Length: 169
Ligand SMILES: [Zn+2]
Image (tube, rainbow, N blue to C red; front, side):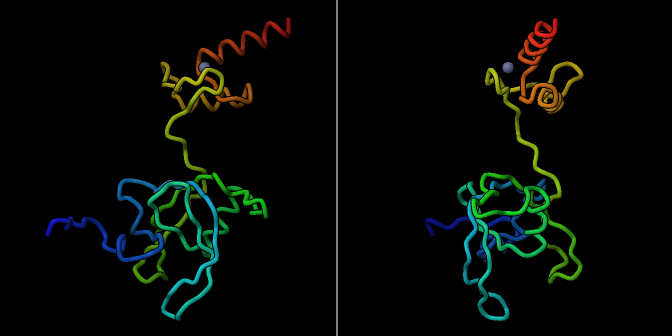
């Protein structure tokens, strides 16, 4: 068979039309960026129901049915959704949680914190911020944001600090 390929992993990844905890990679969370939410007919054991379904900016990921729990989780992170689709572009981290009442003991849930970006980029010079001595890139980004309202690399943070000091003299 020319186009057969071996399937690895939980077969619900290919059998189920909507995202589930079986789609979360074994080595970490699944981080996705919210695009739009549509109302769709979703088939379940009771027949067909109209449900809100969330789509992603990332291509090739199945959409996710929004239940009350997940809606509450995203609202806690990013505020109540308004008519302007204020959640668009926001990232969420999905994980497989132990949910005793569910059919297989697990459920897809959303972390109660915003996912960390993979890398931090200086908003002034565009350089990727790297660890520097005992300072981790993440902390350099955070402390510059707290001090200057911008994520800055070490060099730009130093320059910003000098500029501030010069102003106050
Ligand atoms: Zn910089």
